[in-house]
Length: 272
Image (cartoon, rainbow, N blue to C red; front, side, top):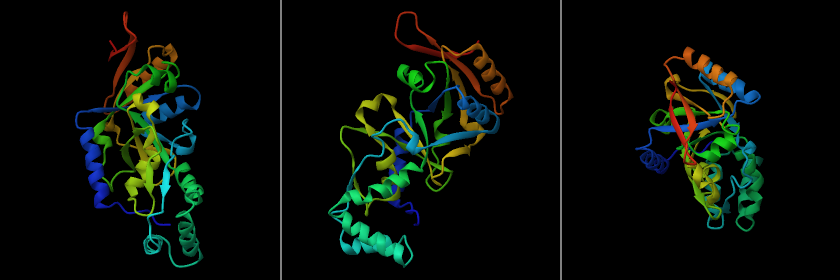
């Protein structure tokens, strides 16, 4: 099946997302240094490759939930939609039949959408570098790191770069997805960029690979701007960070998160 092409509506949506980042110079990624994740960090620093997880491995079982709506699609709409994506033959006929059935039973599409979302490569980022819960969840209880990336360098225009940067919207109910009429970016955002409102404190943005495959993906070295060490990082891991950052070009700032004396808050400053 062909990928949906980016439409002008998609481009307008991307421009609106870009406007939301106008005053956000950095996006962050919390990183553990336990097990193979220590090796991933070394690869990131030495080779400028960022690890994208398969969407199916993310920790929230409510991710990718949506109310699929095909009821308003006419038979002609469905025929045109399938014809633009699948060459004539049994596969096209089966797709039309499934979509016609989905008008009365949307669950017919669940396996198709699950197969698509499960294979998507996703890298989760955030606007916050001092969130106590995220340091605990994703950076080994403050023993890991928080990587600092330049926002504008990450936000590629549609059609360029290996990934699309999308915001995560937080809701109390599953979003509706008009499957046949949704544009490519609307489909991606509904299924991969919507989470339960309980996660709102994470202020998350997601890089979604256009190829769909998870794994290590190269990025421009200048995009990585800094490395923040957790307040409980071990001496060995702190030494590793200093060694890897000293070798990197262009230079990367090394910072450290420290606990405050009188507040439940972290203070982040450059290493002395």
